[in-house]
Image 1 (cartoon, rainbow, N blue to C red):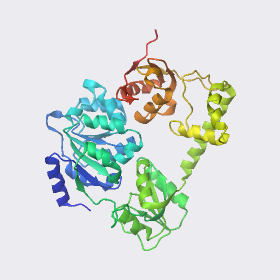
Image 2 (tube, rainbow, N blue to C red):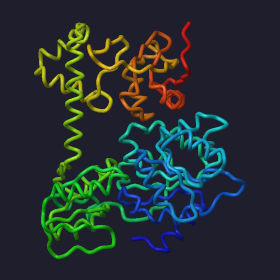
Image 3 (cartoon, rainbow, N blue to C red):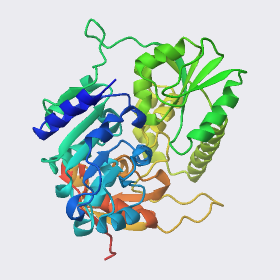
Image 4 (cartoon, rainbow, N blue to C red):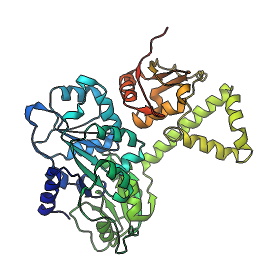
Length: 434
């Protein structure tokens, strides 16, 4: 628990130029102290935004904007055009977004995000940000805001030791470190099940979880409520602390509704932690699996796989062919997307015509040790493009040509310009045929 003394001490530390480290579970509702520390009301002189909240994904950015107190204009980066318009008119007090989205906004120059005007920066659970391979982008953003007051939210500060040393040294601590009496990470409370949900889909997921549990007496728990002595199951609508989970588990079997960024924390406080399949998720998984198998079948029917077979032949001598195929799928961006190569791939017979893609010139190529997979990784992990928004990638000696969906071309170019691949700063622009 935190109180007025925590707020006073944290404010004093910020005024002295020190960062503040708040230990809290990775949920917006668990970090109410943050709003007491941040400035309220619009900044003088129309400077916008005064505060950045850097999140692991766009869904978390939406959650932060929804939780902003009255009188605070908070905006999640869900679309660049609208965000740029609001920035141009100084209509944002707090801007929440991922490192990739914020970096893309800074690449717009005079019409984009101006990091030098940001006075406060909140790092919302960097543990989850680092799990999305955005650490380098985050480092770059923070080095461009050396004078901004920094607040770090973390559920596992021990995992952030080197990061905190770089960006928030000697930070003032608020809350208790997750350690037992012997100074070790505490053991999980006990078993639980979970379902992954989005911010917008939480209500629908609650109904589906109740159907999946199929128990006569399910208690819906949220912060501030007390569980009955005994019930058939407890469905947690909010993310509990370790102490709250101990109380909840005493009432009955526990089910947690989690965002993807909360899963690592949940595994630290509950074990074994197993998935509760929801009907809609199961249907979606079956549909996606059917589509992927159809895509693979169509590619097999096209033939011309000799180069790939030669590459895999040494592995097939040591491993089962099914295991090799599964490993190849696991290595694809998105964990199962179709391969993207520099060679043209004809459309399957009878397939719908492929939509026209926009071409981007990118200033890195084979001489920079850059391959198609490096560019696909940057587009998917750093910039957040979906697999079906990326077309052919042709890697030349001195440059590459990347095809992307027309609606994503501007975002891809801006994001690539804020990216470093194999230590080379990337420049991207529309490709013009010679």
